[in-house]
Image (cartoon, rainbow, N blue to C red; front, top):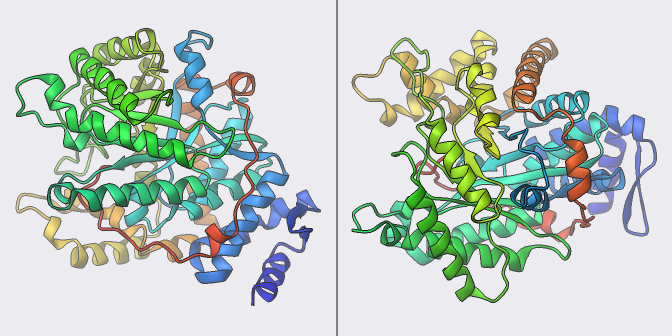
Length: 473
């Protein structure tokens, strides 16, 4: 069966690929750039052997073209040592819908400004409601890099690999294992950057800050140790930690120090010489997705930039990390983005703003169909004082996965308009975040290792969809 399926897939890309001695070779790069969308589409919409082989072929073809999944760890460590200027903030972009098309836009913008320091990421929660497993996400990103003729390291990140407080409270071992299983699946798919998020377990009822952080530091260390057993030879996975849930109260220096000091002690217990964190996520006043007002507009948020700058400096100068990470940034006003560079923020996470643009530009008939689906399936999420606009804004992300096929088959004119508007927005953000010219720093400090994919990782049983309603994006 595999032989005939492979022939079908090679035909889909006009035989611009061939397999020699068990290795995938690109024989016609120009033709592959024109046809690679077919493998991305099969990866997103098909199932079973055909889907798995499309993903395998895409990753192998990308490697043959010099497109290499990589860790940003060494660049971040160089920043912590003061060897990289603090003139840019790395955008980490969550592609929830039309991942292939939106990744093409990102690569196109990056090439235009010679940027290399940018990340594609997907959270544990997003994998559920967008119906994208790690190997599908990697396929969309790498296929987009092929289509745009981008070469070099590509940073793909697991965002908020978060422990559910509810599930940890009833079955802690099972919940920890679920996160470990996701880590294993993700690393196999080329996610060499993982944000460990056990901040859900911070217990503010404890009398001292170190005591509040005990579960957070202990599990962060255990997950880091586990990731070090998964990383391929020559790769140091970039691991991020988090000291407080986004949407909660703002973080403090005391919390950062308590977390990092506790983490270092707990990591030492896991084994001598284990590499620790490259960055740390903090809370500065934002929330994931923003807060919708009754008329559907987004409430203005006051970001505590003083806290961001102070904690970034502590993380960098005292602990050798790249600095602090800002979550929930995409719905902020544009004039805020330049301040992230001013406050020496090492990384910001962007997601909801681009999803909002997608929904706003959908054909009305499809959007109405999605909203009808949400009224039925997400009715329990509606509070009595919510307007329609607030309800749809809160829950519409849950229509992304169920309507993935309809998104892929949108009229070309609609997809072109969405991509055009995304490109305008990405270009603005890359400019404001100072990413222009950052390829030079990536090339200096990141030495990507070619890790050939294992076909068994692509033809095994598909992972089930998790219930991720209580996890952060």
